Image 1 (cartoon, rainbow, N blue to C red):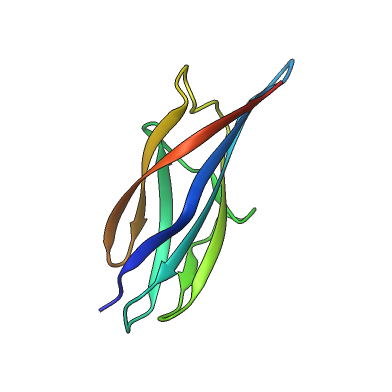
Image 2: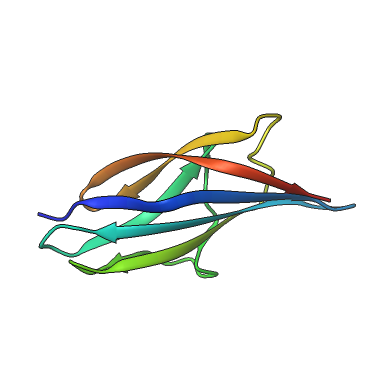
Length: 105
């Protein structure tokens, strides 16, 4: 079966411009199992990602490989804290993680 582990520390960059708010999550996932896994979407702070790796497509993570994913959210998902909880939805189930918040103006 496929099994994902989070490599390193996920980071979410939250920016608030004059007319838009956007958040970008950077996360690396390694498939330590022996079957391919597909990442369908990511939820962060209760909000589902709008795009994965700049596309509206799922992201494959082959067995034995690692994939760095950039997930964009068309809203600010960070809130007031220094961390935000989320999960990765895949063909092998869901995987929880905590991302550290970096805020920019």
